[in-house]
Image: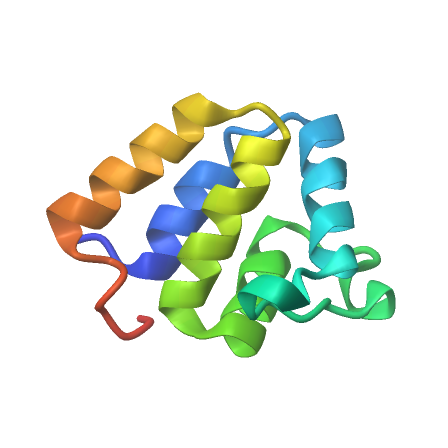
Length: 100
């Protein structure tokens, strides 16, 4: 069984360096309308993919981290990864699992 953090890691690993930079930019911008406050730039600076996942889970909890990831992936035109993560979410019920 795949954990939520592992599914997020597998997803973020497929981003190019430039896409990952853009991904982190959206995290620091936040989305208060949808309940996703910004992650401070100082926390994201120098954060690798694993650190970024930990920051998202701390800020948004597991279901929120998956949802926020999907929102950002759509914005950076990685709908293929949205579909893959969505499929994993449905198969493993990641949106309802606690983080492991």
